[in-house]
Length: 344
Image: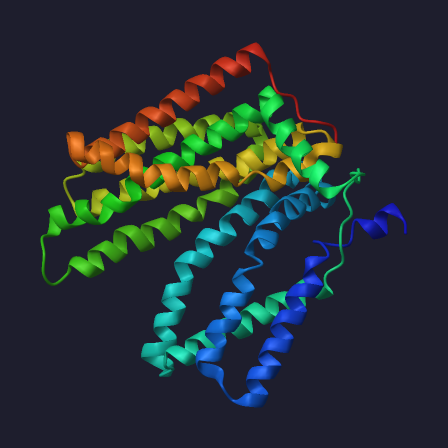
């Protein structure tokens, strides 16, 4: 198989498992007619493979690095980074419309979700795989431990992972307290739910749309400066958020923070995709969500401790300080060792 043919293939061997699981599962449910609660068991079974799906993240990012022209790499990764936040924001809206407008019950909503998941599996099966530029050789366990070791021993990769952890930690520390800020401004009773939805939903969706623009800017001026911009802008927006006097200004502050915070992830992906050597690229990118998981656990707990000690503004100010420290560390590191993109 030629190199050009290899670069037209996408994802990995687990595509066949996903397709088989959903097609066989939906076939059994159709034959037996036990859509409910059978669809729940099928969804639960599919979630057992989520680790392998997340493991494909590195494969997908490495594939984007291989097939996207270097001049638009940031844009491509920015679009990829925006897909999940947009999906999370639109999912509840579509589900509500299916129930309130179309008239589906909960089992119908789950059936639509299952059909979409099955359709995704089919698309994956029909998509050609992109083989990595440098294919690792050896036992899987040894390669996995080698990937972790390379992350821990490479100072540039460690620094990038730490920045991603800090950015997500600031987000997770403050997210649970945004509805409380809304309640403090509008009070309890009618209008509270819609105000929370406006601030936490609409503003979050608008902020997520900033990710592709960050990618475009990264292609123009470099990934490192845009990453620094995301950290500094996020710190400033987060610091003023708890002091917003109106719902409109609070929504703007949340939007600005999420917009700046939303460009950090794609810049982290782009830096790893260009700075890590090809033989370690896929393995390193497979581990890129480890900081996210760690921050997802530590963020809410840290925010609760800080809020209990100094009040509701504490998590926001602490998150802003963490982002500012991350920005300072990034500037100092850039001065000591300037990062140059690898040749595409």
